Length: 145
Image (cartoon, rainbow, N blue to C red; front, side):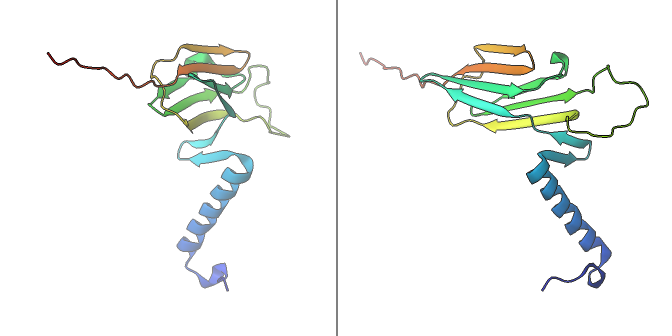
């Protein structure tokens, strides 16, 4: 039977509460809490053809200058900042807040190795599209004289 909070020392209870809360937030709200504040993970689609991987991320309202993209042999990481629009009056408080703002980070592990240089990168109408060639291992034959 779990102990009640008053039966535990306050620090361990608080740590478990924070861990449980962060797990709830991550699982149900798709937010991550970090030392710099709340961040979110934008939705991503990964498509493939025989020789190409397509990465499509939904990031409406994100300025291209805030984006940082890192590519590894089998990993893509996109980070950036989504600012609230300038359309809002200063000093207004939110009655309902469903649109995520702030720092975001998305790390995707791909099913295949890719060439590190993308074929195309486009940011249009709130969609980031990157096209990569699948890594093709080059085999060279060596002649013996």
